[in-house]
Amino acid sequence: MTKSDEFAYMDATKGEVEPLELVDTAIERIERLNPTLNAIVTPMYEAARVAAAGELPDGLFTGVPFLLKDLLAEYAGFRLTEGSAFLQDFIPGHDSELVARLKRAGLIIVGKTSTPEFGILPTTEPKMFGPCRNPWDTNRTTGGSSGGSAAAVASGIVPMAHANDGGGSIRIPASCCGLFGLKPTRARNPLGPEYGAILMFLIAEHALTRSVRDSAALLDATSGPDIGDAFWAPQPQRPFIEEVGANPGKLHIAFTSKPATNVAIHPDCVKAVEEAAKLCADLGHEVVEAAPTIDGEVVERNFGIIWSMLTAWTIDYWAHRSDQVPSPDQFEVLTWAQYKRGSEIKAVNYMKALQNIEKVTRNVARFFTNFDIWLTPTLGEPPVALGSFESPPEKPLQGMFRSASFTPFTPICNITGQPAMSVPLYWDESGLPIGTQFIGRFGHEAALFRLAAQLEEARPWTHRRPPVSA
Image (cartoon, rainbow, N blue to C red):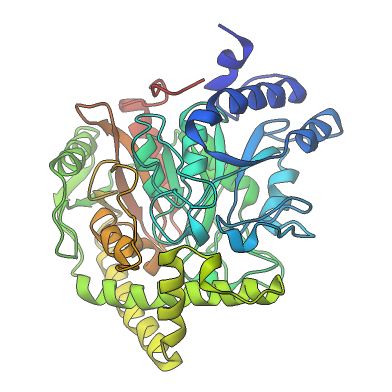
């Protein structure tokens, strides 16, 4: 066994290894596995080695190699493409607040990971870089939009990697790649200095990890309001790392395998939820079949309006910031169709969509007065084949319509702002991971971390290795 293999599946919060040695082994794994996975699109090797050889902050993650998703988070001096040829030459001049906090935690960023163009789709197949491949089956999707980070963590390149989530983009790749993926409460992590309430309404920043412990410890290192934030998440009672291993008590858990939208759910995803519900009951929790009353058509229609307008805003924002004029030849077919669609929506209809979504949020919040946790499938299907979300010119929005049957459960938590996690408790007969989603009350990541640690102990997953791995 090489040193690279020895370090590959260590927790980020364990071990006493020199930073430069950790960085060099991560680089070796990238060079060895990335030609197959296509997960890392911007190497940052020399900067990482300089940082590792210098003076680092003394913290839980000092010297640990880390990967940054190539979406939203800006690292001064290195390109930010957001998976789009439109931004292929854009280099930010400052760090995002989240990146500054990652650095202060002692993490060393060794590269940037692939994302679909502007994070629109739940698969990571940008035309600019080509498809990212799932280490469990390289013909299948990693999920999206944090698919590059998921492939890198699942294959043992790094113990954890940055991810963000606007409709499921942490939980979807966690499910597809057999990882733990927590979307925090709205505004738990900062989006400044560039972004604020407009994006924070839907988008949460965090990471993909193998262990529950790493996710909790990293959230402690990055969470909290930034100067000038319009709103922020409720302060936790104690550090999240202290919740890992703490007694969750007897939780009142509702479960369902039925989506609010009228789509069929794959039998393996149903089975995964039923097994998770039984496991929770065996662990002493009160588990009943129940779900909030949600009009799926209202959610789908209004989320679609908001998502289209977000795409239009994103392209206009980057056009202004990069001093360019957008044209169809600079974007993927679906992206341009979303841009046109969003640009044509009237502001008053956007405001109506927000109001309709807020009604759903209040309805779901009332459901949580009677339950601690809501358990659902993470996805409607196991990881699908690459190419499943293609949009031909004659059907430019086909990929978005296909997404609806793949991700009927995840967007609701972006709408409500609640924390949610995908936990890898089930693998199908072909060896593909299938995650299960646990949704918590607003501001109550603590309950999720307690439960997740209990599940991790009862049915461990960190020992599993995909066919493509370090």
